[in-house]
Amino acid sequence: LSHTEQDHEERERELKAHPISITSKAMESVAFIPRTKGQSFSLAKASLAVNAVLAIVGVYALCSSNSAGVLAQPVSTRTVSVNRLMTQPRVAPMNMAAFRTAPSSNGQRYNQPARQFQMHAVDAPAMTEQSATIEEFLSQSEPKLQKAVMAMFSACKEIGYKIRTASCDKQACFNAFGDEQLAIDVLADNVIFENLKSSGAVATASSEEQPVEVPMGGEGYSVAFDPLDGSSIIDTNFAVGTIFGIWPGSKLTGVTGNELKAAGLGVYGPRTTITLAVDGIQGAHEFLLIDDMSSRHGQWVLSQSFHTIGEGKLFAPGNLRATKDNPGYEQLFQHWYDNQYQLRYTGGMVPDVNQIMVKGKGVFVNAASKSAKAKLRLLYEVAPTGYIIEKAGGKSSDGEQSVLNIKVEQTEDRAQVAYGSAGEVARFEEMVGRKYL
Image (cartoon, rainbow, N blue to C red; front, side):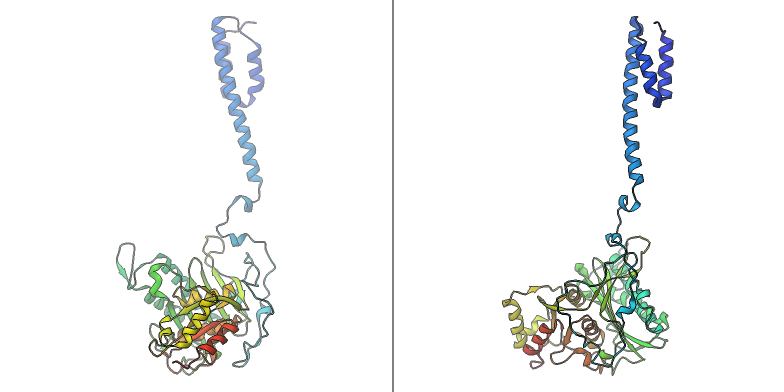
């Protein structure tokens, strides 16, 4: 069997042009073994080419098989979701009627029978793609109340973004070029006023930064707010928050916390959340701002609900300077210490109170004395937070009574306060009370 050098060169060109059909062609080439020295050299080159092409074909086939397998998988198993909460199994749409109760008279709104077990976290379904948005949650509320609440949610969304992108020290913030901007709490104040005014549902608004009643040009409700509680610790990158309360009518003096129609605690931490309590809806409810570039990006979605605050050894003690001349507060602190309570205190009231609802236990106290006066303002902080805590199944007290019973005489009225489980608040009233003020 004789073949020329030209025959082998033609076969090599054919192999390169058609690698997929290599098997049959290769076997033909091996079968016709040349007898001359030149032909042996050519055959060696051909054999090397055959082996190389066979290796390439094998790798190609293996890769093709794996790729086909991956492509055949469902999208959800080959794409990592940025927000893991969105990969939870779907549940039936939430029945919002289950949350609703008829509005009741002052002082009777929270007298619901306590559950017979401690609640560690939540009893709402895990957040899914069908979890209620804030718009759906409020769909049965009075229309102007919806607008007032939504104005605060829109403002908190913008504030959360400004906090994440601002470079701040204790006095001011700076842009990317180092130019000084308004302090972050002033920015937050402006954002809230703008949103409330544009809602058309707010007659009067008042801020802790500007403790006067400011006409908003709308009608229906009045809103008091602390735009950025904890602004003094923002430079440390601790969590801070916004507090707001919504009253009916056009006045923010001569009112009590029992008259609130809604209140909220916004938390700007690793996540941006607002815990909302609304008259006529049982419990307090946390909404998470979706920030993962998914189809729900920018929405506020119900993430958990709070109905019970049980007993537990967790405490957050504010204004400890008052222990120097308030023996009751000193004894209460010693009780916590001797009984090995867990200290969980950041210096920001919003995250320190929020943890009581999330953990389902504990107490927050900010007591006063003759030398260390009460710091927290009744209108902007104490009453709205007390409303949320009591709707969540806890208690509040100024040492003698629920903070919701205290009338706001002036916008700058202040009060000492305890929030938490029934047992811990009762202990505060017994040991601290108001006898050392």
